[in-house]
Length: 138
Ligand SMILES: [Cu+2]
Image 1 (cartoon, helix red, strand yellow):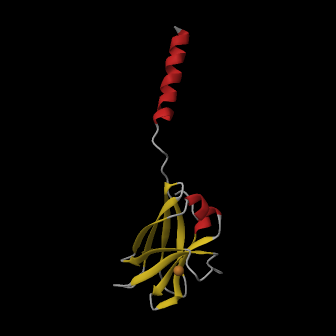
Image 2 (cartoon, helix red, strand yellow; image 1 turned 60 degrees about the vertical axis):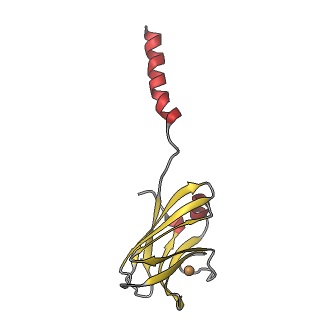
Image 3 (cartoon, protein in one colour; image 1 turned 90 degrees about the horizontal axis):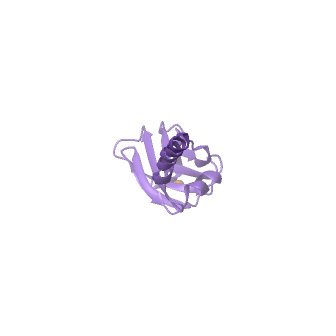
């Protein structure tokens, strides 16, 4: 009887692991205002596959009616390659969601940033930046 009870218990413990759905999680990094823009928020990363990631920008303080370009660049907020590595959808009404063709592990292991620009005609004017290596589970 003891052996059966023990076997039953180990099956009960093993079952949830065997049937568990693929792990989903998100990592979030702060998005910090630059040049006095007052635009602060977060960038949330969600793995879609090993080689694709959903990038969600959420920001407060964006000027009403603005459509602000955003990209992933190589580098840090203090020093980045001005040529975008991956484009993101423009931030409108404080939000942008894009799936990019790169895995979350790469995005957070190397020096990548998400930056936001004032407008398509003032692309060199950066208004906010987020270093993806700082992304954490909340
Ligand atoms: Cu950019």
